[in-house]
Image (cartoon, rainbow, N blue to C red; front, top):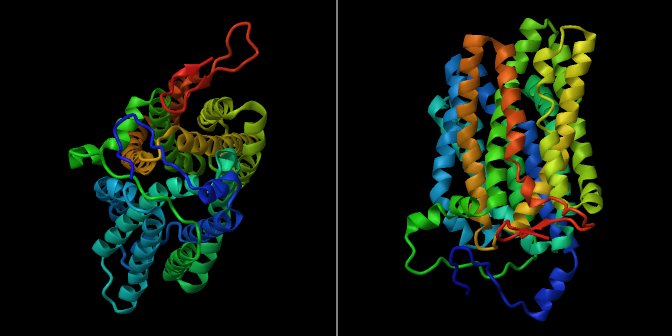
Length: 441
């Protein structure tokens, strides 16, 4: 087994059979892994907002309790994941993914059972929500290296695009289906479907035949704390990943924080109806699907890093439209158009970014880097939401959105532009070294 040291790439000698497996796409196992992901994403889409609905409709929780449900659960769940990162890294990934699915299924199932027994409490909902956060991060942390081990490098962009398309489709179709289920059968129905989806996902993963290589082992005489924060250390030591990390935290935080402010702006200040607000949210989601479908072709034509940088910058340009749009049909069209372009660019960016991170990070660090990224996002987003809410209370929703749009525009400067810059008088692109982030010409 290889011993990891900081900055070294893990190298393993493959048997001829293993080399043959990596020479072409593992269609059967990749399809099973995708099916498991699609099923769980569909369930999560249907279950979007189900726990807050249970808190409101069954427990009669107050507004602040509903707000705190997501914030506290996200931060608590992220804190639990931090010490689990090394465990995922140094164990086989498929059992970790299955365990995450089973854990989420069990905790979600406890909600309708407790409700039917009359024993459901707000504390239980917080615990269940925190476990869902843990499951999402663990599944993502284990899933990235598992997928990387199954898919040849030249197919990663295509496969990541398939995953991204699935996510956007589930996010678009799932919530309306969940709403109809809740209307017909009550808030617990969506939770039952979500729990069942995780069980089906775990079963599907159990049917995969891909044999993982032996997991990496931790460096000798290395303190457990060093292993726990190795994901952040690896990001900080890599110039390109470090720039993408800071930019991603700002983009994700501003995007999430803008959602309630856009609702206030459209429904209160601009006077749009709930139906018009629903159109403004629903129609642009199709652009995310389209962007993820176009991503492999764009990457093939223009290269991975140019696609990542161009799409990453372009997705930051559109939020400024929201606070300047008028309360008219033209204003509604502007809002829908801006949101459509934002999600189209995000749909292209995400597969390119996922592919770059898989290629850039050493095999023995990928799970911890992915977990560190997700944990940081879960912690940063509530902070940005709180700051934006405070700004809205003092300055108004429109001005707060202008501030968020300004932060997004400024974050474009943080993208790793030096990682790709054509040499003067040369027809060749400058390409970043995937391990160090240094520019090769």
